[in-house]
Length: 79
Image (cartoon, rainbow, N blue to C red; front, side, top):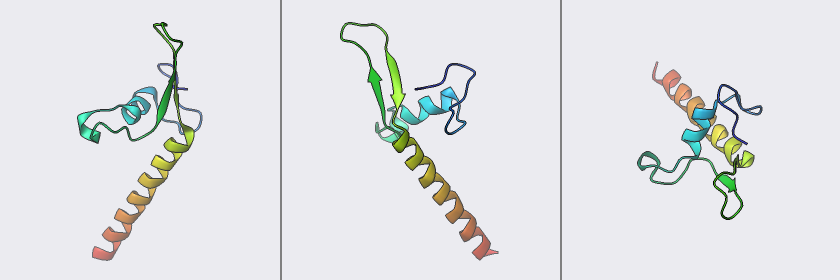
């Protein structure tokens, strides 16, 4: 689940606001969240629990790491 305010994710050390950025559907990401999440809420209930799909989050972080490493390799070749 998403950590409480001021806490971090036990798996990734990402904070609450960064995790919300990753699961948000907005114009910047083409209204397609970068990371999957699910909402557990009873019908008619005003509140619930939002869970982040760990596999999706880890896959996103892996892709970002690969992209970063590739940019470093390209920079090294240009020097």
